[in-house]
Length: 412
Image 1 (tube, rainbow, N blue to C red):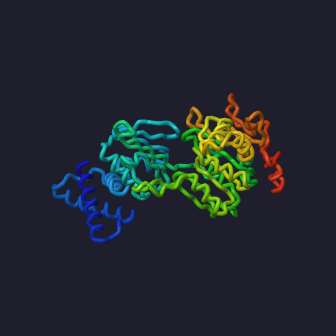
Image 2: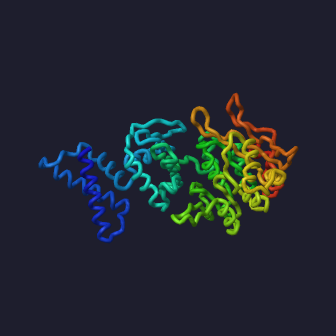
């Protein structure tokens, strides 16, 4: 351990020398070269017994590289493709999640190390966290999402959560291979995206909503323009014509905030063929409904316990926009705007899967939006089976030459 610290100190001294000399910070390859050079120098010094020898040079190199250019003690979890999430409750309580299952690690940090790691993670985004701004959301260079809360909002320690972007699925076909979808359901969702239906993806925290939405957007015809609005960048569409927008917090003077509602309004000025809201939480739901009812196809995610709850929630969230927004206006707007709800959940075994695909025919009865199940997972066999419902706008499928009955039967 002492040997690794000495090598690390030497690398840091060299980095400071280079930067103070007016050079830009070295890139990853240059840092790796500096680490190897420092290891070689240390090995030469150890030959005369002036310093203890390195027992495992390769491991020492990884630890030094992680300390000076990575995320230190957390870097092994970033390098592990099985780790989906990392969170720190206290410096000596570092957790990770693999396949949806949490586990307490053996990593023990101290308060100053946690603070240094957070500042290192925030540096590329330009965002900050302090007493005046105790919450922060940011995207790390690898696409992971960082959320931090500091005292005195928390009791004593910094609470850090890192949701890694380790999506194993990029298309609907990938979800079929992973067992999250059946081939008939995937074929139907692909046809629905081509036909321009408005899709709402619902589910709990960590259920795979963003991954599913990204897979749905990958089915959008390549000639169509996608404009997405998110709190922090998470969506990956693979589209050649995709503009991604993210929110911005206040500056030190309390100015410059760009909320999600503003992004939705600005996105409509950017000629979107598809308007996407990464996650609907508050009053931006009203702006999204208005856009969808104005002829702009779109998609979004929402937290909900079921597909039916997601529809009910969409009838409530727009009421947060102001007292002049009422249920008699919102409920018919939801019925007219939302075409499909795809609900995802995590199974007891930790598998993320689609539980139901719900159609919204566009009718309202006694103040309640009518729905019909197109596909639903059987509670006994756990298989995703065809329901009795049909999607709205069947004429759009026919216009594009899509045989909806055959698609729903899995024959196309």
